[in-house]
Image 1 (cartoon, rainbow, N blue to C red):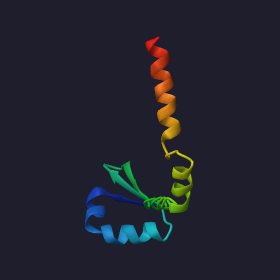
Image 2: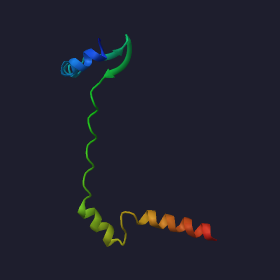
Image 3: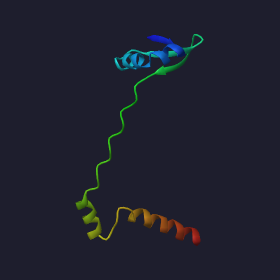
Image 4: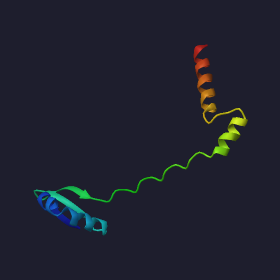
Length: 83
C-alpha cells in the first residue's frame, strides 16, 4: 500500500493512477492521516436489450399493452377507494 500527501498526489497524479490500475492500494493523506483512497471506477452496467417488436405485436394482438396490467390495477384501486 502506498501513501502520498495531498501535495505529492497533486504533483504525481498520473503515476498514482497507474499504480492503482496495476492493483496497488493508493491512500492520500493530510498531515499524516488518511483522507482518501484511489480506487478504480466500477464498470458501467450493460445497457438493457431493446424491446422485441414481435413481443409487442403479440401483446397488441391480444388487446394488451406492456402497461395494461398496471393500468387495470390502478383503476381497480381507484374504484375501491371511491366506494
